[in-house]
Length: 182
Image (tube, rainbow, N blue to C red):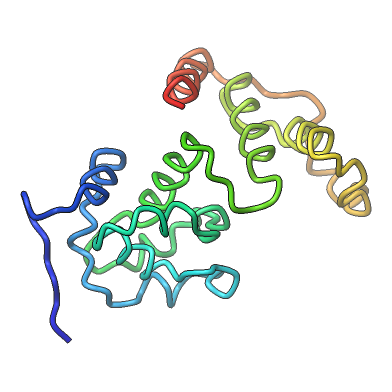
């Protein structure tokens, strides 16, 4: 199989956009498949990670941004760790999510609600406050009793008051800038 390596001016607009968004050069990916082989969620994706990378390389912006995979990625970074080209693939997936969020592309039910609950918690506290995320998500999505059976099991692990970190105002400014780009 012939390896296609796009550099400089031959990068398509989508690959350039991803490079500007994440700092990652997806043209270095030679489709070895290590990212897909290591991904614990591949079976749930509509496209494996290596195909998402190929979509970027070939300028298939619509297909990549409308994929379920970018929303289901847990950003565990197994793909990044396994990449022989040292591409931070998890960062690329996060960049795709950010672009899709700004363009209001949500392929998973209630994903926007969760994403916004997560960002709101991060903005308020400088870190995530799990109880707040759960409450915001369940209230806004209408899934009031979702996972209620897990309550007793996780009560020992949850903090009932948020822990605010030093520099949370800086985090809030970053989140605000991100939200304004929509």
